[in-house]
Image 1 (cartoon, rainbow, N blue to C red):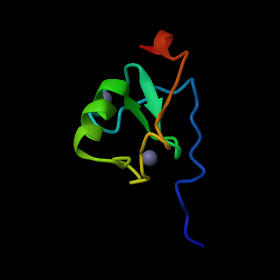
Image 2 (image 1 turned 180 degrees about the vertical axis):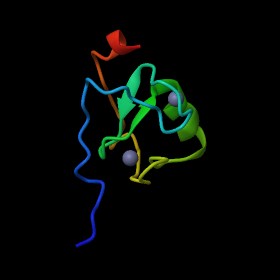
Image 3 (image 1 turned 60 degrees about the vertical axis):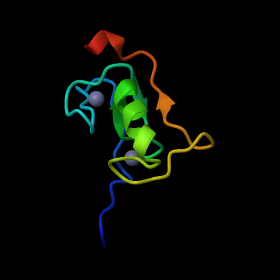
Length: 75
Ligand SMILES: [Zn+2]
Ligand SMILES: [Zn+2]
């Protein structure tokens, strides 16, 4: 059986790395497959792309990344 990344869950206790800048996430947003990015990074990314840089799921106004609230304290 092929393993997928679908079982990745976001733990609020883990340090979270942005998939774009590979640094600590600031103002985290998350794709529907739980990939986390800085809101600034995904903003820039979406100027030239319309899919998640990690899993290529379409990111559109109908399917936006969601903001995560409550991670500020981890920085
Ligand atoms: Zn970033
Ligand atoms: Zn993704």
